Image (spheres, rainbow, N blue to C red):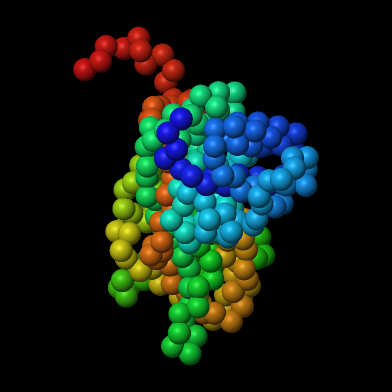
Length: 297
């Protein structure tokens, strides 16, 4: 086998039997084929494999050429946020349910992985969002997101009132249960469930979607990925919660304005050579299954 990747990191987040089984299978197979392996130190003790290198995600990001994330989309989101700081390529083995980000089926993982490691794959650079505020004239980053940033009241019964500026121009007043700011990758996540449009992943855009607004004129808006969104909160807006990919939460108590924009980092996602985004949509969203019966024009 021609090694297009020399060092491979294996990342998992849990002790589920399926994930551990896949990890062991990968370790033996990769070692047999001459690859250097670094296993996530959160699962190494559950693998019962001797003399194997291990480390945290940052160590994998620095040392490995490829990260294989085993699990579901949630596992991928958590890994990508850390790995985006490095140039490492990332691919996922789907041991979960939905699998918009995890392409490899664990039932045929060795065949697909063999092709990928031989250099037959599709590479994508996908954008990240970051949120920050300005304190004493300095930029303070809160966190970043692969799918979306969500703003809502920490009190589920309260609405929020946000003035939205795009590139320092007032755009609209968001009086709603919340506000979703999404990447194209995240257009098939939370924003889709509340009526947002699907945006193909490589479109350079950011979507703003009011969450259950109290005015019929509120609509999603798609802006250039180079734009900066400024959010001003009313004086009586206390305990606003900001969530990143529904995994990291912060309460904004003192900050009365924050900024959201594309990060200057991308994450390097790769897919099997036969990957087709529209096939993925048809499969995951149960779009018309008998389309082959229609003539192709």
